[in-house]
Length: 490
Image 1 (tube, rainbow, N blue to C red):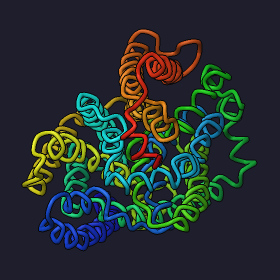
Image 2: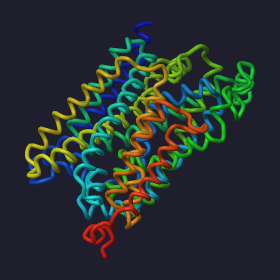
Image 3: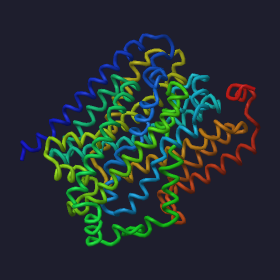
Image 4: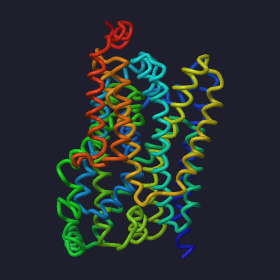
């Protein structure tokens, strides 16, 4: 049995070696940048000097967003709820389209004009308020620690279920590996590994879904098996009708559809592409890859109910894969969902570090920007250690932890970014009112009224924060003409 498990582990170790190699390759650029004057280091470390092409843009965008929630927690939810959850999950398909189309050229042009390397940089220049920057930066760190904990938990469970090692050992193996290549290589290591991971994810998803269909005797046979287990598994309303009510479905289209524009790790990708051709290609490639990955992994979760019974939801992917494939092949395939987790957590770590080093330290504490490389590496280690410790007591289904963190970030960033980009009248008071109302109402609803009017918790906070933004903006003076000129050139 131990030898069989080792057959699964060896391909995963080889995969990590390739990831390390990309990290050390990227370290050369980081080392050079560390000798630059001013903010040169942060430009390389946090945004990779803005040179992403279309394919890389698509892969890093998709790989960053489609994380443990989509590849481990999502299939686990589909295992429990059947085809209805597959339908809900597909609301994430336009991720790349919404992000790049809504933010588009304007965001990239403005980011270059104001020399922004994080979303908070954009908010600082647009609203010109130090307290706002501090609040936003602290929100980034807090919610990203929760989000990274979800990714660490998902990866550890994946390794635990496929290799058979204790959860704590799997957590240490994953956490140390991701921290090393992210810390040494920065944004360039992240986008290069994201590209590799996006390819691995697509190949692995396709292979395992085909194998499940073949092993199940074809789709009609699998559907019949699901019907015999529970008719709700093949119903559009699912075993729990509340999960497919009109209000809940609409909530998902908001939470994991349009509103993902407000996620800093996604919006940052719209700052770093090379040119207009890269933008257009990124939209096309990103939408196609998202469709393949989301449909494939969630169908795997739903169909897996007929393959293995009585599973903890988050273990469905590794269990089904190791059941259907020889161990060494399973190890290669399992690199796909593991890649999804890695490609998300590295981006989240980078942005959390950026919030501390760039948004607070370099712009508020040490404006002469000295020792940024040293502070960056120390911050990365500290945040990684906090996430590692927080991941030792995981919830039953980590998909909910992931959604909580995403919803908190969306409540913070969505309206200040979009309205700040497109609405000249938007001002500091409006942004502040939106952020405070969004975060405050989201936490309050989550604690005391988790499903207001049948919607997901995120919906009413977004409506309230939009209303607060508009009311506060019109109740206070217009932005300074200096800001209008900087962003609109008039």
